Amino acid sequence: IAHLAFQSAAGRRQHLTLVDKANVLETSRLWREVVRDMAPQYPEVTVDYLFVDNAAMQIITNPKQFDVMLTENMFGDIISDEASVIAGSMGLLPSASVGADVAVFEPIHGSYPQAKGKGIANPLAAILSAAMLLDHLGLAEEAALVREAVDEALTNQILTPELNPTAPYTTEQVGSYVAFWIADSNEQQWNAHNIAVGVSTII
Image 1 (cartoon, rainbow, N blue to C red):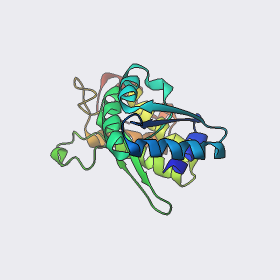
Image 2 (cartoon, helix red, strand yellow):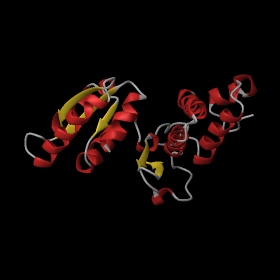
Image 3 (cartoon, rainbow, N blue to C red):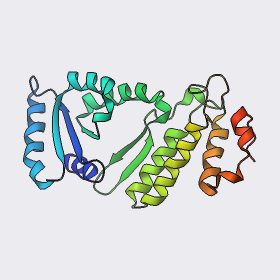
């Protein structure tokens, strides 16, 4: 998993942060030892080390400092849920479980059965998970287009109720908007007035 973290950082902003509790836990000291031994194999990547309590504070006060965070499951579950507060909704966060031969991509919130049939589930995390899948398959341009479409939905407030409570769209409408934008990203093809005033029909 440390190799995967280094490889991911090398393709991004070349910054890796190991989050642990090496001042208390023997297992965390092992993590540090392994990462320090591995770091020379990735000279382009800068490595920082943070105790988990400090990392929990830093991710709120200065989230932009982080690129790739490497940690064990016990800390990662907490840090990732905390990070969702910064984004505004767990419905915006994709996730990946990547092995040597198999990878699984899904929203961080899981299946969310409470929203079944109500049209309130935010589809953007699932869509961004698909973008991560495209990246994993080496389809960087296609992944970038998907993320650009999501950015357009956020910019134009085409959002489900937890992010746009005054003029919400349904799950299907948000998904259709993103799909339409990917299929034809020429803005002149949209009815911009309808989008601006919150009319659900997109022409």
